Each structure stands twice: as C-alpha cells, then as structure tokens.
Image (tube, one colour):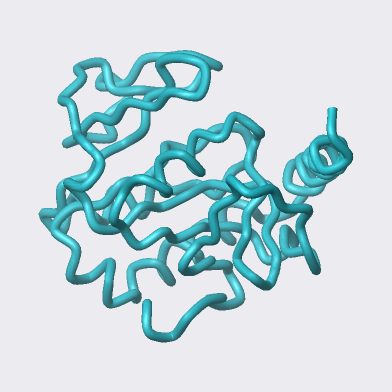
Length: 192
C-alpha cells in the first residue's frame, strides 16, 4: 500500500466516525437538499443523477422527491461489480419499489437503464472534502471513474464538519465543481 493509500485509509476511518456521530444529521441533510435546489443548474436540469443514501451520508431523499415532483428525470447508481456502476431511472421513492443490492445499498426493484450523458447534474456522496473541492470516498473509485467520463456538473453534498484543509491526492482523484453543505456552497460561482 502506498503512503497516500495508507493516509486515505486512516482518514476514511476517522471521517466515518466523525460523520456517524454528527448530531442533527436529518436537519442538516434537509438544509443541504434545500441549498442544492437553489442552484440554477439544478433548477434548469431536466435530468439529474443522485445517490440513494446509506449509512450516515447526507440524506438525499428530500432532494430526489423534489426533483421527481418538479418533473425531472432521476437516475440512481447501482453497484454491479468491483469498480462498476450501472444506473437506473426511478419514478418513486415508495419502499415497495426498492430492494437491497450489493453492499446492502438500496436499488430500484425494476431497472430502467440510464446512461452517462443523459443527465446534466450528478449529486455525489463523500466522506471528506477539502477547500479545492477534492473528495474522499469509500475507496472503490466508482465516482472518480463516472465523473471522469461523464459530461455533467459534479455536486458533492456533505456536512460542513467533513471539510479538512487538504486531502491526500492521487492522479485519478476527480475535483468536484461544487460542494454543498448546510452552511453554504463551496465552488466556482459560475457553476451555480
């Protein structure tokens, strides 16, 4: 394991504990989802890609519900193999429409294939981020690969407490366009 990989692994463990113990996650998630909805790119998007939350991630269900209510198409990721994502369009958050998939994540019961390039905004989960808008994920590289090959606005959503000064970086790490937290938006004003 390289020094950077070792640093990332230690940081993942630390940030997972920090996020798991953060108080008022539901309230903070609601504030984050409301801020995302104020982005002009979100307002004008006809289709978005958004993860379905797991563990102590920012709960994106209010954002997904708002997008569906506004008539936007919503795609979600599905982990199908090591370092491999597929994507499906959804039209409901009803519990009966979802099943447990790989890693215990929820995925649509009926898959309606969505393909990179069919949406204009991608909402990205993370464990930590820095002021340069680099993110630390779970280490599978799923989002780095997706974002590197998909023409989309990449919007990370995170709790403000997940921000650190500088993340260890590797060549494949992808810089996000924006990161939306409960206390504000980090990023290039032109993307908002």
